[in-house]
Length: 472
Image (cartoon, rainbow, N blue to C red; front, side):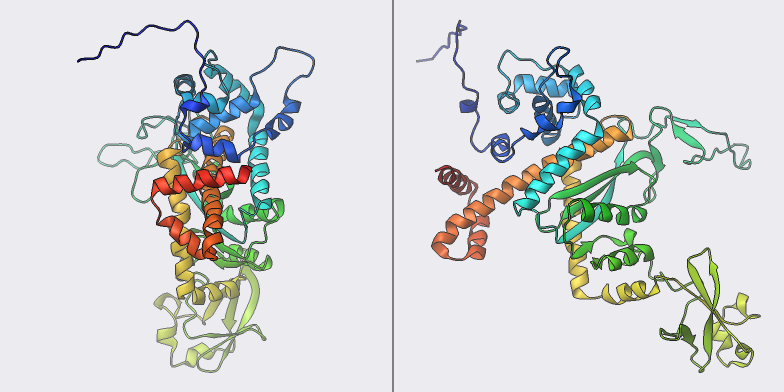
């Protein structure tokens, strides 16, 4: 017999939003692990105590932002619509069925909070996780990623010229030179033109992230213009992380874009082992290769293969490179002259340039060919590159959502937080389940291995049992 549903709207209904959400929902897990109540005290000085009408709850605002970045909702209007329609979102934001958020309030509150509030929220949570032992801070990985502007058409150029500069006439056409020195974005001057590889120039920002290598949790994110080179940012960001979070970092891993002398010198002064390959293979060799010359560190001189010496000439090139030259006219009678000097230098004596960071560069040149060094670089690739890929595909890092570098910095903080929330939920699950299995197996490592081989349903059962056990 065919059934027929007669719909009749009830006059009164008692609805439990939490009962309608499955226990394995990501928002349920995050809500159990994160306490957002500290935001009240953090934002207390942003509101007037005895004047004006009550504002939107700051925790409601922050929870809505967590939903937006966690599920890749790029528009504030769309975020309000999704929260209005999705029961799980409503429960996480602590909204009743009659409550309806307004997108215009999000922009006002975001501007009222500013970068400082989001930065403090980020730092407070990092310090809490450090105290709990989730973030060890012993090994760090650093990298940067370009983020295109918010415009939907990446090939369009919204540029205005500082001054018009033209190349010479070519086949009757004038070609205009476009660069950051001559042009600026009409809509957002903080954007800069960047070309990567053979692609055309794009208006972009850049985010510089530091992650804890053991937990894969982001401990630092810094927004700059797209044309800002990474190598100048690393010592500054490393100094911030070491001083602010007081991590006892023993290793720092990065790609070859950061391989320069001042970077190696900084980490040596901090007693941190670096796994950063040289930016160029001839880095530190000077304008003319040293060839078979040997450096005498005690006498500060180079030894010529024929037994002569090159002594330092204390006039520095641009203040950073020392020049060594041979004296006594030995080059005129040397049998190696033709192979030692290039053709354009045949009429002068041999000289060598030495960087003040030459010792660090030589050490890296030796270490970067070892198996341990190469394994660290592979670890960097899949860990931090994977986080960037995850953020761009799922958490709104593909483009800047708003205009202005200060708003992009807020976007970076929120993306880093939601990625950390996901790592935290996974960490708690593995840790608790590992303890439960260890009680029977007496082996934590074997317990973790068995967890990875369990089915998703069995993992969920273990997690629910662990939560129930921990509450009693």
